[in-house]
Length: 482
Image (cartoon, rainbow, N blue to C red; front, side, top):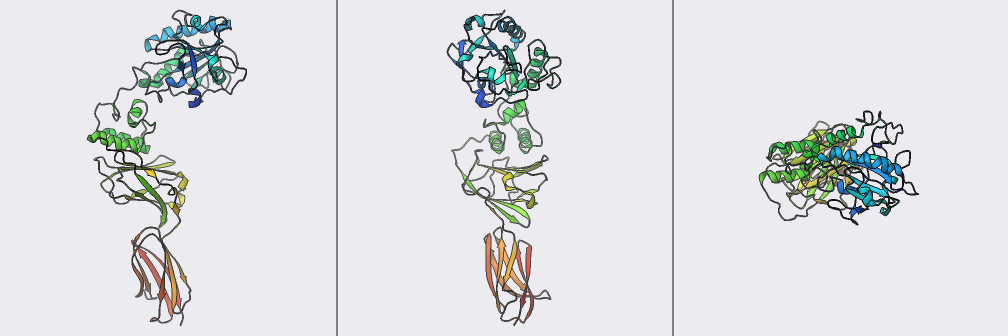
């Protein structure tokens, strides 16, 4: 779309709210304040409601705006004699870019009415608002350190306060909240017109010619959806190469404001031409365990899984391993404080089973509260995590925990822990390393177990009980005294 510059004149209030300073982001609450139109223009008629959020590209489908707010009162002569001509001059300068000016006028009719204000200057003000009808006026939110009319503020296309110039011709600000020539990048002596040009350049395609023209998923803007777009999106999701402007907008396929594994699976579907199936509404359970000093993450879903995204906030790089699922693409990246991992198929294949196992090395360095997991189905929709499975961390280690009593004659209890289900063997060896007995051999689910061992046929002496599972062993010494 074309660049939109909005000039707003606001009402004075006896209650002065805390104002935004240069660098602050305007909250969605304040963007959503209603302002009554008292002199209509274009899509707005007298009596309509205008909101600052109307020009937030993140909320209106991508029509971004650069905004300059001029807060004035109809009864203060300087506002009319200086403000209207200055704003009108900027309107003339930026008209070819589709510049829009909106006047938010305090106390209309004292003496200037909304219509009179709209018709002032050379070209006039297109749209006029009655700030007396607002619950919170722009003056309360944005006035400069002088706290007097007229006052100005400039917002960029992200709805961030960039500067609060003391006038529109040049800027000699020295107040830290208003921002000074030395503290505002690009101010360069205070020319409002030059600074607006910088903001136009920053906004780029988002503010020009109707916004972005590339189709959803076309991240490299070549009008073809293919593996190049997929790799580009993967790099953004894991944080190795971030997108911005139009490619970022094209990557947000489900338009939720976040680019993640959901969009990745949706892009796969677009590339291979597979339409959306009926809503699946899948769920999953999550379980954390410790195995051989590594963190084991067990995920059990009730539907097919098409993609997984795992983020672990940590100051050290961690190795993340997805068991089995060799047919999937797996990417990992560490950006200095977050370990990002994604797994998906570029050909519509799903995970091997509804049971997914991840292993993270250096378990002791991981705070479970810093783990985020997103699981999606074949539509790219997130699976709902069942209640009670959040951070279900079981501090079970693979360990032969106890032989009791010890010394013993002739029987003792042998206890051990299994963090994951596996085939195990619990065998007895003498001091020469010879196997002399078997306590248990077979399959155990994850959990804690105790078996009785009777050594009636063995002589007194030292024996070693060894637990083995998946090539990992744990052993304890037992003393038999007869």
